[in-house]
Image (tube, one colour):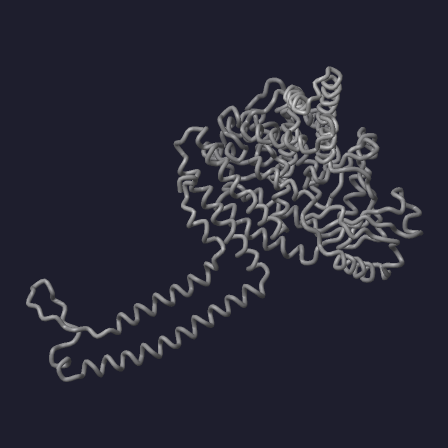
Length: 600
């Protein structure tokens, strides 16, 4: 209790079978009441005028023994009732246990709430407890909470997978939105969740080939790597070599990536959404419209044939765009694709985050641990709101300190390191700006983009291009939706922003608030489609806290579906820009695409 506001004993209850113990407790209490009621009552003579109730037994029945007979019959009834209720309690307990063991959704829900429930309660209690505390004390207490619960939270995500993996991916992409302890651990969720056994994966591939193409394994594949390239919440991807003629008329050659869907993934997601709805009611108020759109969009991922069509469409759009020289989208092999299996071009490269870490390690003398340490400190600074002004000063200072610790103090070493770090800083900023432009083009010109964009599905390829993968969750905008968002972004991108025009554009897009205030609608617009600067200026450490503050001023009644995923894209790149020391204003990069769409 000296370290945390909430007593530890409450947290320790998370592993108990609360539901079953509650049933047994009720049965025990009921039986105790029955036995107390059956005890013989000895009458007490009194002449008090305040006691008007008659004795339960009069003196004559008590002396004659009738009282003992009544008590004996009452005990017999209690024995019979006790027996029936004990058998009933046993039946209820066994039935509940059998139901829990036989029903995966119930097991998953119980697992989540018995482990996450105490964590949520502890955070909510701490929020109330520290409501009048100073910032330094709050940061200290919350830091201990984050250290304590980040690993248990990751265990929950990795055990349940499904929707919780998706949520972990989103959170790991926002180091300025989520505490650094969670960002570092949840980063492993991008692709490194535990893979399914290879034997099961191979059997799934064989079943898919037989059921949809009438083919056998040996008709198609030369080999397949047993170790997955990456594992996600819905499926996992393996490198494979296909036989002729399957690769003859295909740009990617004989080496392909094969994506396999996990069994029962679709039903698992459906049940996870129900659990997460309750979590939002308890801990994340105001997220209901966002969750509804997430569910609608995410459930489109469970058809790999549809993903193959999406890949074809996005790939064609990019080849016809001004960015064809800079980005690559893998080509699918439709002849081998099915609802549960996707075969596509194998892109050569690394995840964007891994590539940046490797470049940083090389720049500071081949020290990967030092590179990780710097990025860890950078995330911590972002969480505390200490964002740099966009130059590489802190990066060079960290590298210089490292050289001094290692005894490399020559001028040549310092100049070489500084040159590499400046080059890395420019490279990261250019890459983030390029991806912002590419996705702005997709939103306003093509009106189709990745609805699940995160660092795990962006690659830095060996040929210098950016690889865009994983289009299972593709968001499509109508022309009207795209133009409505364009009007908001275009107005926010101007040097002098007219709040009235922004509010009108937000209403045309479909936003509705309780009191319909122009000033608050403009604040929502900046939060969704521009930057977090206003939130930080008003003392809100995270966008979630700022959203809650705005909700007290003029709560959102309607959030249009089109806005949810566009805002999610904005949040992603703002987080990546913040990590690079370059705070991003999304409207600065998207307004040119918005203006072009409005002009056309």
